[in-house]
Length: 273
Ligand code: FE2
Image (cartoon, rainbow, N blue to C red):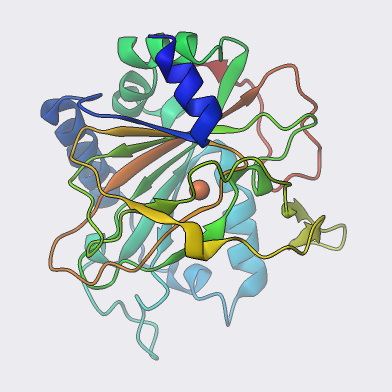
């Protein structure tokens, strides 16, 4: 299976069909519903309305690297601060440490096939630093702008490798991933960091626009794993369909690379795949 590494190095991404069983995908979606049912928004809604409570929202976000936090779709709340839909269908994602804190997510994240994949891609030095369960609900699931994952998980040297798991079929109309084959052979445009005065900011390295015209949709079936080089530009469009497009993502970095103390995500005790 050395093909995996050759393809990944050539294209900057790798698609592995039937990586997870339907039952494994279902276990994660069921677990997310359980976690959400135990999350009580009452009295905390203002945290998530960034225009009014930017500081509080910043703190919630900046503390989320080491716990399980809940993030809403941009249009989830009405002008009175009430959810327009039920809680579950208002969420954009859960993050960012389920892989270490929750048994179901941990089992999915460190499965035998993940250990084999890490071995095939020569990632034995890599540790898991971030997990996200992205709901991309029907009609409300929003756009994810073009970005490079190393922007958000910057190391010296660069080492971020991401894993994107389709928990449901992903198509153009429900917001599948788009990326540019070979697009990882480029520079990192910017990095996302903590600002000395509080909050966050981008540090720009290179103003070259992302080559959005060269991107292709990666339509994949439930159970597919897509591996992404930290430099390959990728995005997803809004979900305009009547079906959700749930996905789980994991990000790894080299344990021997330097991880700056002003990266947005700070946590300790990183463990391998
Ligand atoms: Fe990404």
